[in-house]
Each structure stands twice: as structure tokens, then as C-alpha cells.
Image 1 (cartoon, rainbow, N blue to C red):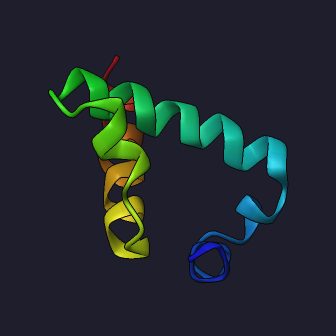
Image 2 (image 1 turned 90 degrees about the vertical axis):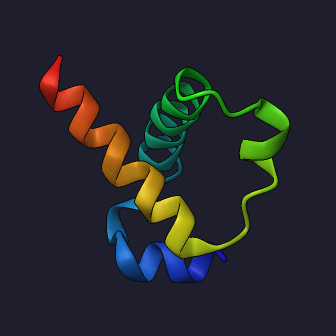
Length: 62
């Protein structure tokens, strides 16, 4: 899965960058009503990228 994510977002090859974005995705998912367990079970790169897109949009709105 990580290879597909790095192909889509090359900056995620940097662990610090990925972890910062991952934290954003987790915060957004939790605020949207998902459990941490559900979020950590996501293995579909398209779902991860979708979650990142929405989390980024919500961050830009704030």
C-alpha cells in the first residue's frame, strides 16, 4: 500500500511528512465519527488518499 501512496504523493516518501499528514487524516476521521480502530484498518490507497483530500480541504477552511 505504501508504494501506491508514494506514487500518488511522492512527498510521503519522507517519513516526517507522511506522519504529519497521517496525523491530520486521523484527526479528521475521528472528528467525522470514525473510530481509531476503523481508521487504522484502512488498507485501500484510494481511501487513504480520499481521507487526506478531505482532511486537507477542512484544514484550508479553518
